[in-house]
Amino acid sequence: MIPEACAGYLDRLGVTPSGPPSREGLFALQRAHLERVPYENVGIHIGRPPGLEPELSARRFAAGQGGYCFHLNSAFAALLAALGYDVTLHVGGVHEDADGRGANGNHMALTVRVDGEGWFVDAGLGDGPVEPLPLRAGTYRQGPFTYRMEPSAAEPGGWTFFHDERGTFRVMEFRGEAAAPEDFAAEHLRLSTAPDSPFVTTFAVLRRDADTAHVLRGRVLRRIGARGAEERVVDSEEEWFAVLEGDFRRALGDLDAADRAELWKRVSAAHEEWLRSRAERARRG
Image 1 (cartoon, rainbow, N blue to C red):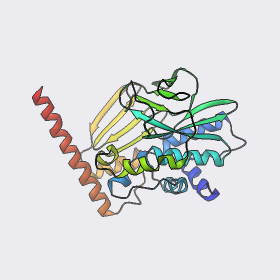
Image 2: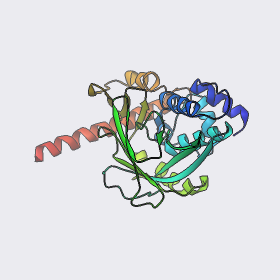
Image 3: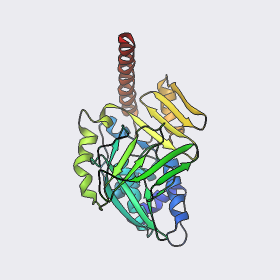
Image 4: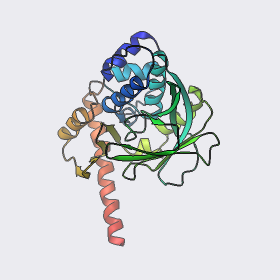
């Protein structure tokens, strides 16, 4: 990544690295990334899905935007490499059930070796760990959340990450071998454009801080933390955009009036359909 792109990216993170790569530096970078750069699919919902080039993503992040896993982790990997970290890309798979199905390619995972130890590093899970996890089997506590790492049964040499039971998914598995950026191009195209892709059908923006996972799906705002989960519906367009910009730190300068109107229309239509579907399920018992 060119120094100019790195500079704007680091400004967004609010981190000024000093000295050689270190465990402390890696942790500070991931914490800042999860807190300041949201997981979001705004571009997909206004018909402008962003490309995957790390430099492009870095410039978008510097401008206050975010992305989903392929944008977030590819740019973060390039930034870490530019700062001297030994970082590797891996093909991964996010699953909603605890059994998993191996690394199906719908996720990009990262590992980093620093100070003689390997770490699972991920800025692209939305409500995932706010700090790296060691590549060692075990259970790990971060604030009110509990995670587990185990060698993958489905991917020899790979790993399985088990999310906190309150998370938006249950399992992410990734392969042991290194991947290249081009290994994700076809799946990125599918996820960002296919009519049945969850990124196309459902608006989502997520952000983590030390103690709380913030999740906005459509018009339903959920916060998960030490006191449990709090949930409410955002009723007005004005408040919805205020939440997007304030709570999730997603700048809105790239959206004109037509973009905002289209985004609110899509989100509201999906919300009404969700309400109808829920009422029908309740009626059927």
